[in-house]
Length: 102
Image 1 (cartoon, rainbow, N blue to C red):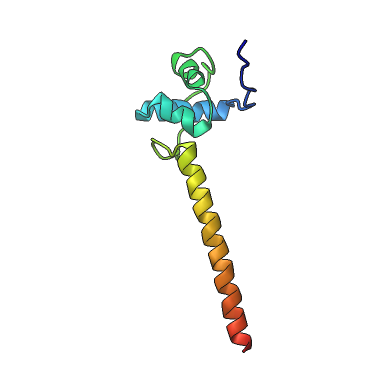
Image 2: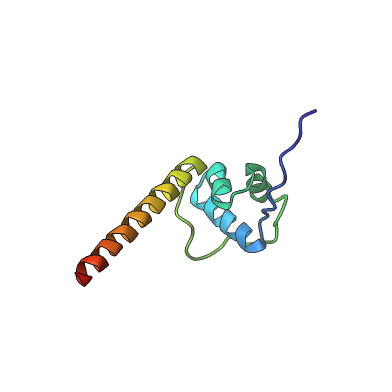
């Protein structure tokens, strides 16, 4: 028997649904919208078809940038690179502080 993964616990609010509707109206792909919110594409399809949040109007105002968005692997690599850069900056700071004292 296969076990299912634990639910993510992520759900969309009415404010999220308003953004989803505006992003759909802009022409964003459902897959990209789902990636932005970290939910299954079916949740975006439910909003697009009116199955959920039928009464919510599309958001007016600034929207997230259009996708595609970085995948988890790319985001993880970016965080690792930032961590390495942070360590290098801290080391450089220590060298400068030591140099000033001498």
